[in-house]
Length: 121
Image (cartoon, rainbow, N blue to C red; front, side, top):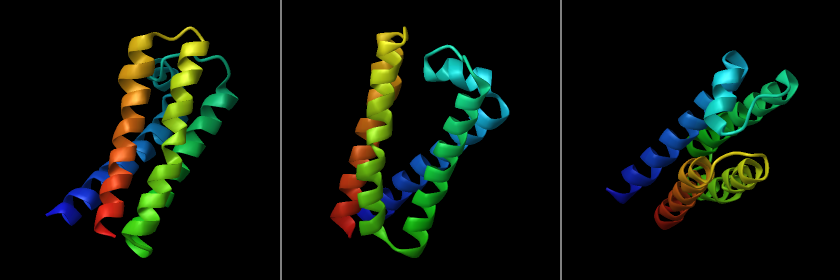
């Protein structure tokens, strides 16, 4: 049961990051608004989309081809992104609700996913 939960959560999180990446590529203004800061340059939004999309695909590939331990280390490291996003939003005029309610909460869930994957590896 714990293995299904660990893999399920990790897969959902990676698919969600892939979705966010695609959203930044195809609907950059809406994605930036959801991120919590105003969209200023399309190049930045494209880079963010590519980064998030590649992280989502990499996480899925690690789970599929290497296993839970590699996925756990990946999730542990990738949790730095939403932690950094929290700081970016706070430093650039975003609301605390978005910074903590979206980005910090995401980091906590990703860390929880890492812990579950470590537990089953």
